[in-house]
Image (tube, rainbow, N blue to C red; front, side, top):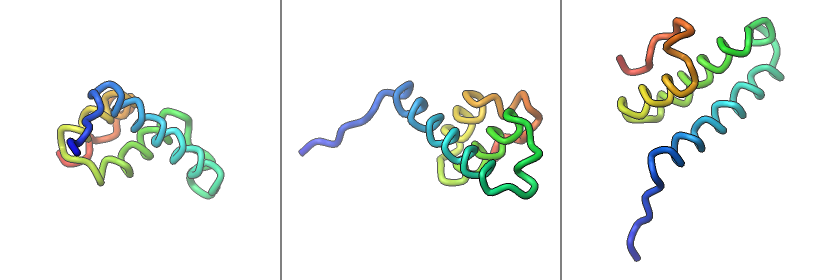
Length: 77
């Protein structure tokens, strides 16, 4: 059976859904995350998920989530 590779845009959309889910879970956890704005929380969640990705995908995810514009360093750089 041949492996199936999702198109880049489809994989990035899936990762953005995971960032949204992680940001929601962090917001519900409260503490320091409760006071973060949506963009900051999304950047933080993208950084967390980015630790599991190869550097090119870290950069794609950070750009797609606006993490680079929010002042969060791109993971792995």
